Amino acid sequence: MKKIIYALVLLTLPVIQTKSQEQLRHTPKMYKSEDGKLYVNKNEPMYLFLGTDPSNTNTAKKLESEESKKYSNPFYFDTEGINTIRTPSQVDPETKQLVYPIADVVFEVYADGIAPTTHSSYFNSPTFLKNNIRYYGKGLKVTLSAKDQTSGVESIYYSIDGQPYLPYKDSLSFTEEKEYTLHYYSIDHVGNIENVSTDKFTIDKTPPIANWKLDGEISGKTASGRSFIELLAEDKISGIKNIKYQIDDKPVKIYSSKIPLSYIATGEHKFKFWVEDNVGNITDKDHGTNNDINVYAFIVDQVAPSASALIEGDQYIGKYLYVSERSKCKLIGEDDQLGISKIAYSYNNKTLDNTYEKPFNFNNQNGVQTLFYRAFDMVSNKSTIETLSVYLDNEAPNTGIDFKGPQLFNRDTMFINSKTEIILITEDNASGVQQTTYAIDKKEKSSGNSFNIKEDGWHKISFSSSDNVNNQEITKESEVVIDNVGPEIFVNFSIKPIRKEIIDGKEVNIYPPFVKMYIGATDIQCGTNSIWYAIDGGSKKNYAISGSPADVQMFKQEKTYTVTIDTSDNLGNQTSKEVTFKVAKK
Image (cartoon, rainbow, N blue to C red; front, side):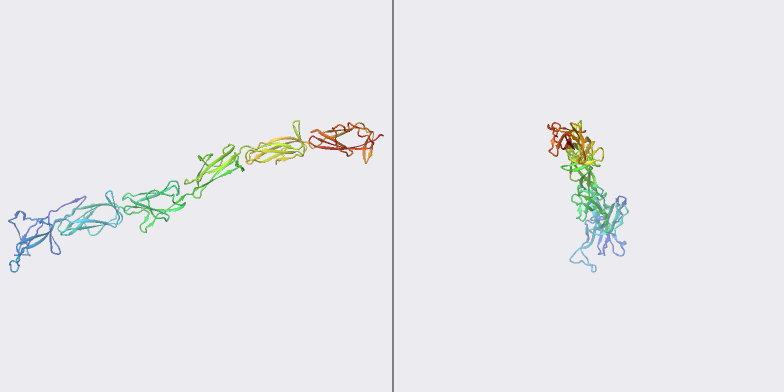
């Protein structure tokens, strides 16, 4: 009789809730593999049936156990994997005789009570874990794979964000930027159901927000060498991984702190930077071509400006640079890049507490003073402190008058003649005399320090000087009388002529012997100084000395006499006169 064993499996249907979706219902069952192995669910009750007609299982009868009745209907397999059902002694199906050596008849049944295990694999995208949250970038793919130790995996099921479970067939794609919840499990061929596994992760497709700025001494896009480039970046999802930057064609560097510009040469430069988040999203990249989208320009100004001073108005270079109270100082700053922001200055110290606005006057204090100044450009580069020393001359020259040559001061009046040199004497204690001018009787001015006046009479001399920084002296005046006329000579005789005669064509007075001659001279302006006489070409004699023709009878001989008379006034103006007369007794 043939023994036919049937294994009947009775199942309870588990229901597992995960969030809003339900795990699918799966019925425990038996499974016969392609190689003929029978797999049963180890957790299900088993029954044995015997029958004689393999084509009609309905006639099979359930086996009962007398010896272990409690554990036989149903019974359970106790071993995971292969189990055996045995009967004593093998009998030849043809002869119905025992087969020797005696051996059991063995029926193999594979019990499977362990659910599969499913593993998820994430690929094609960078990943980052932060605060127990897993982040992925663009292009994420997820594959699910399951293993079962005995009957093998029948199906894998998954659910995304609470949607109904679907059978897993191919890799899963996640393209939307959001937080995802992925549920998945597997069942084996005998209905063992794996507990649901849950993966939570977030897709981050958005590049970081990034910007840059010049920090420090800046003007527009120009900065000093003491300034910095500061990069600002933010990523609200996976966070910043790194910031890279490049200046001109120099090597790319990782940004960690403000970039000093002190090592960058003066001039225009190109700057670009990239910010990458923790899942590979990068700012300012065209990911199709990997070309830079934004290249920024900035200028570094490491060169200090220059400063100079210009004197406007009165100035003269001698022992010092002389200026007047009218002079103004113009401060000039020059810069090749941006221009000048300010010029600071101070007097006689380096405090530089004044800001230059327009040309200014120097301190109105006579003497040397020093100006300190420096220029600042638009990014606070500053020139060296320059100095300008000047001598402020705010005093006019002093001019006096003197006379060289004939002169007489009488009755509060200065008498001179055309030969008298009028000298203007000047002095200046600082910049020195530049020019002396004079005018006679308010006529046109002339320049010079000495001159003569030709015309007789009273004259007014106006004169003044200016120094080399144009300080002008107040005009002074001096009055003089010009006397170019000598004394008038008068000749008288002690007796009247006795007659007149024509001698050599001239009418000549005739005087008796022993006649005396009296000589006099009168000068209206300055008075007579001296009278000299000479008889008949003889030596000149001073009339004022005793023995003159007025004192001594010099004309005793009967003949014609010629007396030459010379006189001068107190200015040296001279007059000459010749007197011819004849002495005769009759």
